[in-house]
Length: 128
Image (cartoon, rainbow, N blue to C red):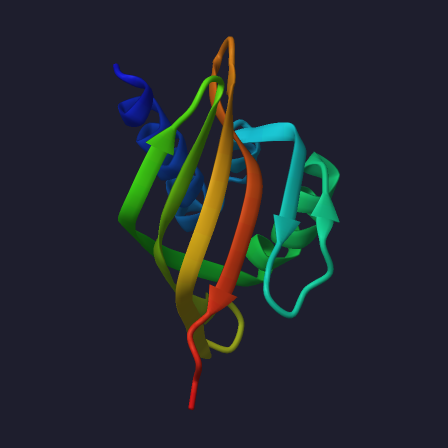
């Protein structure tokens, strides 16, 4: 596979891990030095922050996520993806449905075993 195909595969593994409730599958796609900078949330550092953020959510809800790729650029050992995300969330107990959508910037770093998400920055679309 080309670098672009490998990066897309890593992103799809993350999304499929989220949608199937498999946090370990998600973690396998993440760089140990990952930084998450998501709207209305504190900045997270490292894999432990990913677990702390997503494990309770996966326990409580089901997810259906999507991503429309706008741009991908590969550099020496790094890559950036820009696109639009969607996520539908259903509470496992109440059945309440929610979700969101917005823009997303991801930075990946190349490792011997593949591309890993290093930076995750998002902003949600205005709900007004």
